[in-house]
Image (cartoon, rainbow, N blue to C red):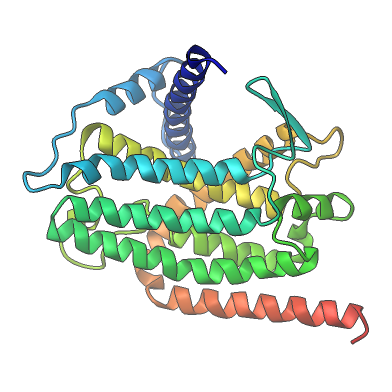
Length: 324
């Protein structure tokens, strides 16, 4: 492959990320506005692109004592980890990408689910790097709290996924989707696991208003207190992609992925991801945002109990079906 072709592919990927960020932001604003019964501004089709370009190209002024190499590298590392996690998820039985024919998705591994979880933890480490690089006590404290919440809520999320893993007997997302194609979606078998995983993933996210502190100045609860310009836009892009990753995992593990009533393919996964994203936005901004302070630490305990209960019930049912 020549250097010119590689350069064109890199530029194409950058443009695709710009367009994705623009319309993800537009989609989120539109859905939240409709859920809140607010009027929608009369924006043109190209306005989101201009808005995203303005945010990404805006000058970033780091704090005076910031460690600049890590300050600028942290959002790029976080973006790379979340994009790789999305690339692991199988999009369909066979897809064509950039002139190549791929089977089951961009990456064919036997532990794709485990790899997605590991990459999501990598994003927490890069968030800590970004918080440390700003050399701000407020931002470091908030970065540690964000990482602690992300790791804490990942435990009930992983336990909730244990039910689907036991039903399939594999950590491969392709095997999980194929198992649902020959039977019914795991939504019917694992409703408790789906509820626990969704709530745990949302509560462990880094997006406001879920990360506001219980008291004090609310601005101190913003992880981006010391960020601005293009760096802030990259972190916002990562947060949108994180929500998209949650929706993609829900659609893949519990809604049969690319399977549909007829002609299985990536279009079914796309439709399911869009529908799940709308539900996640409603849960996050319409329900959890109003009850975050009421939930407090009880949320983690309740979700852990629900995840353990779901795992035990699934194990008991499987043992009973095998006659043990």
